[in-house]
Image 1: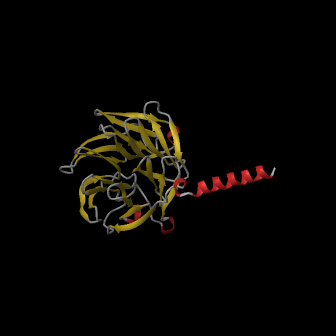
Image 2 (image 1 turned 45 degrees about the vertical axis):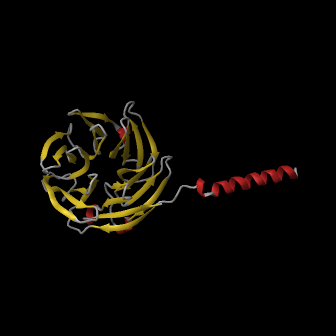
Image 3 (image 1 turned 30 degrees about the vertical axis):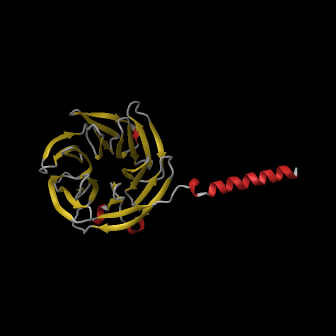
Length: 288
């Protein structure tokens, strides 16, 4: 009996030591503030890196569903300088953006707008189906297929080979906001109604929850190695590991600072957060 007790104790200690080794614990991630813009932006809802040296910023400049023509797109440098405040004007309440070749796709309440990046002019628009549309986020896969979320109508749209259609709809989407194409067969979806990051199989149209408990899920960006960074519009930012482990990186709710549709630049390890009502972008370095 004594020998059995000693063996059990040794086994318990071994398991405990294994659990406490650095390899067994996920590496903590933290954000370090690098810069912030001035406050000449107007209700910045989303930010998108062009892959070179510029950040596109969608400014609502009014109510999020107003058809007032006051919305615009700005250009901001990677060190936070506003290079062109009104690069493209005449939009209503622009939100999510996606880039493919020389086209910037932007949601604008009830429509998707394609803007020529060479001259900032709108080239084409596609209208949502039905009344009460609230087109929100945009993602483009490597082949140029565009996916758009409709947060109010529980719909996902697809623009493929210039064909615009409702790709999926129904309550199972749980008020989709953020969308991110991962390869050709998968879409990451932020379901705002249940505060969850979910994965959608584009072939079977089945969904699985990766992580939840993130309130008003907004932007979704890849961090690398199957990990993601997810924003909660209320003012939180989370790191979600490939296995679903979630870590809060930022919480500005007590200061009433929102965290809208974010962007992440892996090469610079730079996370850009649009603060919505505070009219500025804030950049953070991601450190492990």
